[in-house]
Image (cartoon, rainbow, N blue to C red; front, side, top):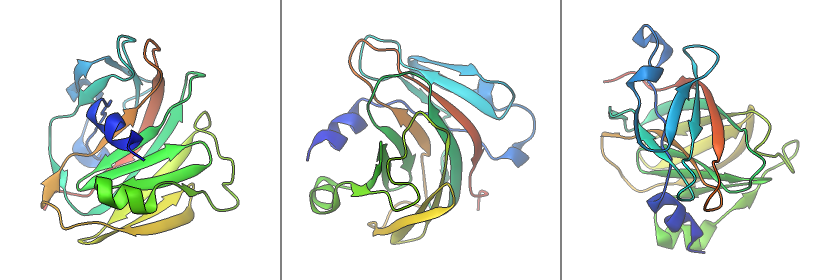
Length: 189
């Protein structure tokens, strides 16, 4: 399956600093395509694709540690379908309704692809808010959705720092929107 590579090349990123970073961090995001707007408070943002492509893109612009605990709550706000993706140093977590996968390379994706979410998450939809937690180690990533362990995947060795982001994909011409909230990143080393 080659779709994840295409989604990764045309993505929407949203990244933020940990809560301990001080006052609002939403204004620190830089929109590359699409827009990022403040949500209800300093710990919420909304990413909107501009409609000219399948996605928008925004970056926080600061590298994060390559390993540790990453957490975020995501909710698709528009009725369209597509994947939600969470970038971590070394790969991507991909979510579609009822399924999850980890992408680190074409070869790895061809071997593992999407896995069905376990009970009680069977059939979980992107239109509900979901808490994603990733524990990234030197060679593995363990994933929880809403506190339920959904699996662990091997990952290749990666840099000591990298990007953390949120990606939203929809059909070309749509203004896909996702609410991003309560993000947590590992402390800088």
